[in-house]
Image (cartoon, rainbow, N blue to C red; front, top):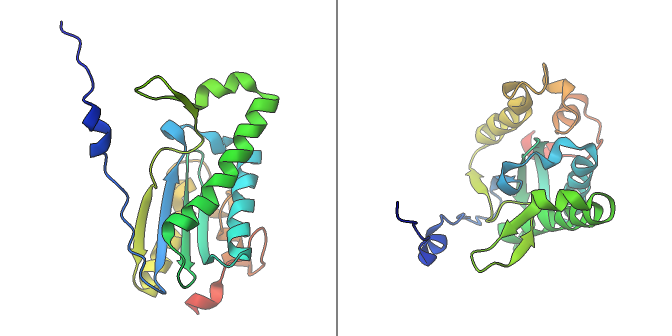
Length: 193
């Protein structure tokens, strides 16, 4: 059997995430861990993600409507502030988590680096927390679309059999929406009233 080589243009043909930065329109963003690995199975990683989400909101990059952190991916619903691009929001969310995770792994569990290793076709090695690319971006054009997507996010752990009820999953905005309390991260409920 003849060994097949990978066409160098193969990597150029990968689908690119398209964003439509329409003012005042909500976006449901989904981004995954490297090779769908369950990096968010550890509470420390989930906490880093929560802090990153809260930081972006505090810096007024976006209004936050909902989120869920799953073991291998994150869904978040945001309304970007004027002149804020989705790619910048994604960078503000993902980069701090990646840096913290890589630092923690290097200091505390260097053997785990193998799980984050991304060997390039040219032989270079990079360590990744996130899957390459921007993930998925869906514009939400109406309040009904937003409410439907928030409910979808909150039910995601149930569908995956990670929790019996939405209230059992600590890594989502469900508690904030149901209790009206702004912990662990406030959501901008006033946008849907």
